[in-house]
Image: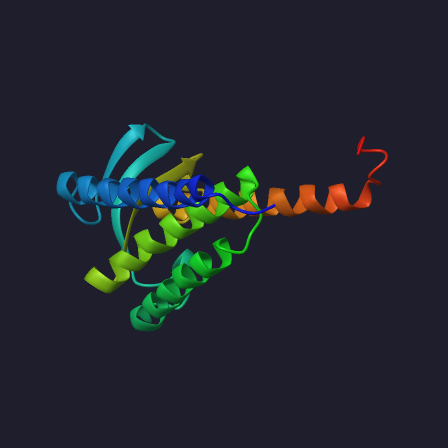
Length: 167
C-alpha cells in the first residue's frame, strides 16, 4: 500500500501538534512554577513539578547533552526517511507522527537550553511512581505503543491464511 500526500501530511500534522503542545506546556510550567517547586493537579496523585533533566529517560547519560541532542536530531531524520517508505496504516501514521513530535520537542530543549524541561509528576501512596516526565515523553511512549500494535497486527495477519481472512 502506498502513502498518499494526505497520509504523509497527517503524520507531520501529528508531529507538529505533539511538538507544539510539548513546548507550550513546558513554557507554561516554567512561567508559573519556580524551578524545583510543585503545584498539585490532583492532590496526592498528580503534580506539576518544574524540573530540569540533563540526561535521557530516567536521567540516564546525565550531563551528556551534546550527544543526546545529536541522537535526537538523527532520530528525527531517521523517522522522516523511514516514514516515506512505510505502509499507510493508521497506527503507523500515528506512531511515526508522535515519535517525531516527541523527538523534536525534547531535542529542541537540549539544543536551545542544554537540558530537557520535565513537569508531570505522578505519585501513589506518597511516593513518585515514575520519574518526572513531559508531553514529548508521552508522545514518544504512545508512538512506540502504536508501532508495536501495528507490528503485532501485521504479524497476526501474516499468520492467518488469506482464505480465512475472506480474501
